[in-house]
Length: 423
Image 1 (tube, rainbow, N blue to C red):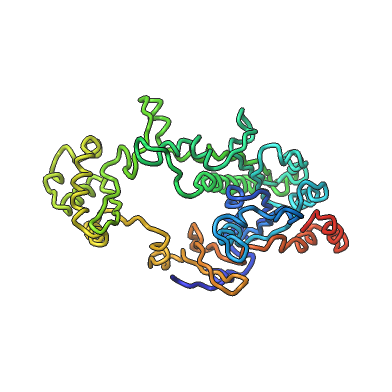
Image 2: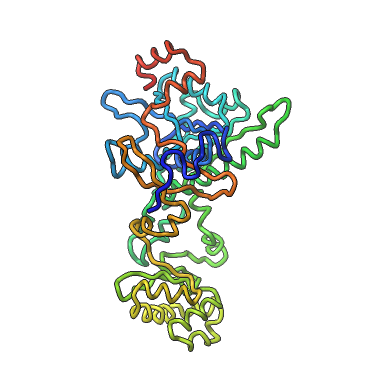
C-alpha cells in the first residue's frame, strides 16, 4: 500500500488552500447524508464547522457515527473518513443560547447543511426564513427522507427506506429472492452528492447576483429528498413502464437488456465480470473464447439480437470461463480488448497498484501514533486538488476557538460550559 505524507495532505496542501478555500460551511446533522456532503466540501478546502451535541450524564455526545461499526481506541475508524478536515463544536441545540450561536455562525457562513427531520430547524428558530433574513447570501442544504413538502414530509426517513422507495431495492438481488441491500449506504451518499451539486450551482448563481442590495449575492434553499436522489439514478425505469408497462425486475449480476454482461465463475472459484455488449467488443469476445460461429452470426451482430439469445451467450461464456483461472481469463480478455475485471474485496483494493498509483490509498496518523489507511480524494482536479489538512476532530475540539470567532468572551464561554450548553 502506498504511503503518503501524513496529516499534511497527499499533495502537501497547507491549510486554507483548494478550490473552496475561504468558503465557510456550518454542518448541522449527523450520520451520513449531511455530513458526507460537508466532508466533500472540506476535502477541497472549505472550512467546515461541525455542530455536535455535547456529552452529558447518561449520553456520550457527538455524532453517533463516532461509535459506528469497528472502533479503535473508542472512536470509529469510519470517523476518520467522514469528518476529516472539519472542526468540531459541541453545542446543545435544545438551548436558546446554543441556537443563538448557530445564528451568529450562519450570519457569516456561505453554506449551512442540515439533515434533521423537517420542522426541527424551524422549532429551534433556525429555519430558512430566519437565517436568510440575516444573511441573504446563505446557501442552505436541507437533506431529509422525503423532502420539505408533500404528504410524507414528517415521516422519519433513512437511506435504506429511500433505496426501497426510489426503486433501487426492487432491482437488487437474484430473481425471485428477497431484495437485498447494496452493501453500503448508497441512498445517503447519492443524496449527499446531489446536495453538493446543488450547493455548487447555488453558489454559482449567488456569484452572478451580486448587487448593491445583495452584496454577497442571492442565497437559496436546496431541498434534497433521499428517495428522489435514488430515483434520479434509476435510468429508464419510469419511461419503460409508461411506454410499455414494463416493470423491471431483479436480474442478479446480469445487465438486463444489454448483452452479454455478467459475472462468470472461473476454474479457481473466482468470478470474472465480463462486459461484451458493444458490437465490435462482442466479436472480439467470441473469437477469444473460441466461438467464431457466434462472432459471425448475423443475428448477434447487434444488441437486440444478443438480448434475445442471452441465455445461449451466457452459457458459452460460462463454459469458457470454467476452464480458466480468474487471472488467466482476465489476462486473455484484456489482451483482446474486452472490458472485464475481478470482483474486488477490500483486500484486493488495498493491494492493487492502480489504486496506489492514483493516490486512492492514503495514510493518516492517529493520536496513538499508528497509521490508518483511508480513501483518497475524488474527483481529481489538475490545479486545485483535494487534500488532507487535518484529522477528524475530537468532540468539541474546536469549540472555544469557534466561539471566540463569533465574538464570545472567555467568561461567556466558561459560563456556557458550566451550564452544559457547550462542551
